[in-house]
Structure formats: C-alpha cells, structure tokens
Picture 1 (cartoon, helix red, strand yellow):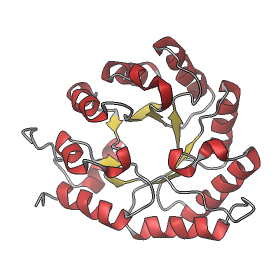
Picture 2: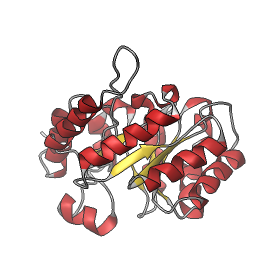
Picture 3: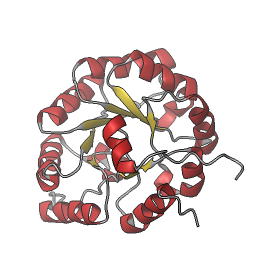
Length: 247
C-alpha cells in the first residue's frame, strides 16, 4: 500500500498512440465447442462483440484460457480467421502460438502473422523444464521467423527462469519482444521487482485472472490479460484508476 502512485502523465489514448502500450483490458477468449468438439463460430463472434462493447483494448485467443493444448491445427486456423474477422481491425488481435515442439511453435507463429494477428503471445515451452539459455534460444528462433511484436509469458515448469532480469534480457536482446506477462509462482513480488527495473519501451501486462488488480495498478501496470469474464467490471476499474479516481 506504500507504493507510489505511477499513473500515466497524459491521457491513456494519447499515451497508447505514442508508446504502443495498452491501457485497459486485453482478454483471452474461451473456445466454444459443440458436443462433437466442433468450433461454435457464432459463439466465438459473440464473445468478441461482448469484449469490444465492454471497452477492451485488445483481444486474444489460443492462450491458456482458450485451452490451446487441446486444439488441433485445423481448428487453430479456423479460430484465428474467425477472431480476426470478428474484430475487423477495431482493436489489435494477439494469438498464442506455443506448442509442444519448437517446429510447431514456429509454424503456428508464421500462420498467425499470415492470418492477420497484430501480436503473438508466446508462452514458455509447455513441456519440460528448460534453462535460461534454452528459453532465450526458443524466443530468438521464433522471433527470427516473424516481424510482429511478441508478448512473453512464463508458464509451466519453467517459470523460475523468468526473473525480472531475464525478462529485461529478452527485451534488450530480441527486437520483437515488446511486452511481458509475468506470472508463475510468487508473481506479485516478481512484478514489484520487475517494475523497478523495466525499461521504458517494455510494457508489463498484469495477469492472474485480475486478482490484486488494484495493487498492480499502484505498481504502474496499466493493462490486464484475463479470461473473458466480467470485462465491463474489470475495464471500469482500470479506467477509473487511470483517470485519477482511485476511490
């Protein structure tokens, strides 16, 4: 509670245009399927419409909340095309591309870019416990194959590697890395330490399903990647705080 207030010095809309940073909600969509596990495209479009009506600043899919590890390649393509079409350029779209092999991760990343993604959400490798050099090489390889910005997210067994210093190293060494979503164990303390050393060009995005959102706002975090639920409430909280109405 003693952390100094670090609200943006100018209106969020102007700051977003100047920096490319986000000021508000950027949810990850759930994947609606029927009883035979076919994609319910109209339900997915309704999710997008709900998020945009709630004032979200970006929309994403094929992250953890989308259950990406249970989705086949054909459906991945269908999901990306549906979301990009439903958003229709109104806000940026980010697509999760992590897979169980590096080759599939690269292929997913190229496809997402080709189908109209504005950013990639690249989680740590879902399988195994990689070390820092291996994870750095993983991001470096994917980044070399695409040109759009990358959001780094630590998940799974590798989360202890994603220290504040390592996240800054990824940003400084890999041109495409422009955002990080730091979670894993002890995530709030990690965010506290990260915000002390984060470079101006690297945006830290809050996660953890929106838990401790007020504490994260007080740390200077201005964007939040949650599931699709309660976006009108989450967005109202963030926008009130950013406008100076902490109460």
